[in-house]
Length: 508
Image 1 (cartoon, helix red, strand yellow):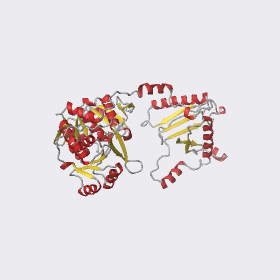
Image 2 (cartoon, helix red, strand yellow):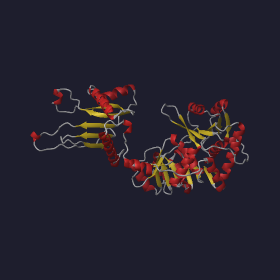
Image 3 (cartoon, helix red, strand yellow):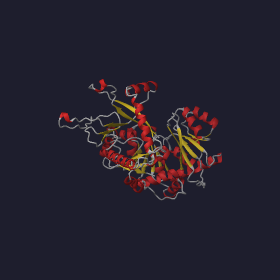
Image 4 (tube, one colour):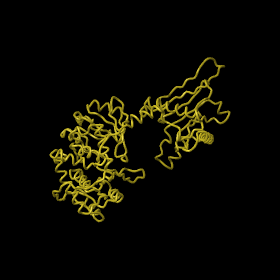
């Protein structure tokens, strides 16, 4: 394992410089290789050698290094966010009388955290100062960090030939708390069932309840199930197999929801593609996912539809003739693929992430346990259809007997139109990002959140100022959630109380 931090160097290499007043200090980046199969003695010796070798570069300023790097690679930012400083220069001189030297902070830092280890009064005791950015860390963060550093130091002092891999970085008290409390998220549920079972349970229990509202249209659970059955039967007869992938390029509409459940009922997995994406990216996502079939609608660009039809079986859902079919009695396995979500990817090309049926069953069950999702009535659907948050909006609604209030393109993008949608349909649960909820707090939006009962925020940092404004606008419960697509959309969430915005509670 490698780590990169910074450290200040005295940078006074001759007698004249040592006797000249002024600032000579230079901060240099230090790359440290931490071998897992090495004892601490060997590691510390190699680290000392590495640090001594770095001294010969101390005249090469950090600003010069950054300037050169940015000449060849303009996006380069700071090379490190942590500075470690060790200062034991004797600052006390008894010939000058009785005085002592103290450490003063500047209330300014260019890095996230600076750890200062000092003994400037020649006491023989090391004092540790932590300078940190308050918007990123809390005082307790560094109290906990200091406790861990002391624990690590104690292990090394008791046995300095200890293997690096055997050094615990978590204290026994923390480990016990993590294992017995933090990670104790076990919830019993029948793992042999799938999300399709949850949906069909709702069809039986709430056949006449509105499942989806879109513009001036509504569809009940019974009607949605019938249309999904009809589409699934058609897909199966067309040749869709159990492990095939079906791409969906359908505008925001009830047809989009029918397409999703029709594909699930056919036994295939789906990949949602926003048809506003560049054509090159759409072709890439279809080819990369291995999709053999594509569901489109009348709003798709005619030229693109023709191109797709040349190498795919395309189905125009806008012209699809629905027949009455019973539920397809497919023996779906809970480990089957559910869908493929494309993220931006670190290489510049979209990266496909496969989500499984049992993963989403687990996620919905966990969030229902934590938030009682089934107690709400109407959930807002505003996420872009190709994002994992959209899939969560759909399933959090339709697997638990709620109504999905699906925004059209204008309502999705315009906060005033979105506000009217929320108020008109009495939405009581919203899943969105902090930046989008911030727009709904604009004065011209006429506070659409005052009757909302719960808001689940994710994807971005929730700030103290935004939370305070939310508290003034609504009595809704506010949840702070986090998790990449790779772990089925979310892995942690926390009910925010007071000003504790920490995301710490495991969600699944």
